[in-house]
Image (cartoon, rainbow, N blue to C red; front, side):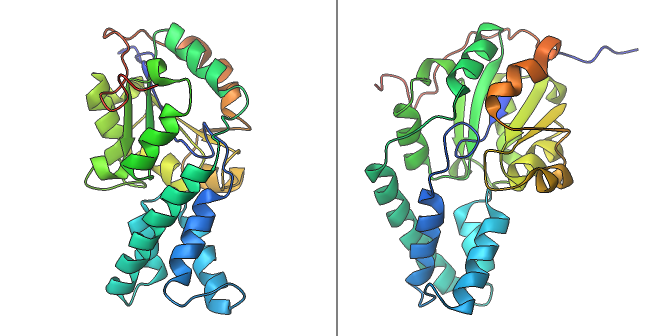
Length: 247
């Protein structure tokens, strides 16, 4: 009987999972949709924002194509507006980690577990957010939807994280995410443990329906959830190239 390997890689979502969701993403989507004449207070706006909320965790371009399914040029124009709005919003805000997130990441790293961040955010915002935290030396890899052919809910982000981290077996991976799309990404990638986190946009019922084996209130609970399931990484931890030398 083959022994199940221990967890040597933990892949985390970012906004709602490791840092608080302060509404910057929702605002960026609202402003992007408004550039296409869909404004607050209308039924069309309510439908569009409901679609945004359902699809959180997917790449913004994919979400906006679903908002404007009959008009690709409008979706593309909205996506350009989204990028501008999000960059401005991130620049105006201070980054607030989820309470206990840094302690959880530190405990996992000290136990020999590699850490990867996977997100639908553009690479520019991902790098900026991580630079604003004190986690640079804890993270093995940080991946955006721009780094893979397909973002969540497809498995590409989690599988690419496994390759970047040198994981030899998909069963060595845990995926921790606050959106249904992120949870589905982990399930499709074959991760041995997929954990939903209630600190993001989707409730526990939605996370479980997407395939979360466990749902926790906060990422601070994760070390206790993993417990004796942790294995030991054979490659030393290092910061991703985009973050090295940043302060």
